[in-house]
Image (cartoon, rainbow, N blue to C red; front, side, top):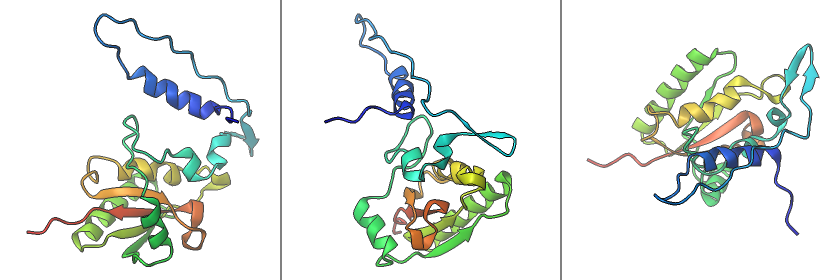
Length: 180
């Protein structure tokens, strides 16, 4: 039995379908608009909180590269397991707690480039969960890691194991540095 499609999945599919164009001479298939979320937004301390922000990062962030958001793809499951068990060593760690977005982005880019230059294959980025699990750094770090500055360096990202920070941290797999 198939499970029903969640509203966030419908919205993502509608965005992807909008980027597809039919061959010349063929009509475009109809695209139905995404359904409104069935879960109303929560109110916390006078502000509206998106219920999706409380989901684990693995559910919010698609595991494959998203051409719309420019995020790197997820780490292969076996490699993620080796990193979590520290069979593939975590070369370095950075903690972005307490930084504003501009400072955190600059620090993250410099850190990842330096780690790649030193030959590390995996690093840990601690973003924190934020208030009620809706942290700005937690949401933005995958976008920054997929940006133009780091595209040639980052192989993939995944949510960290609980012992390394869980939802408030990311494993970042780095590409091999070319020999020469």
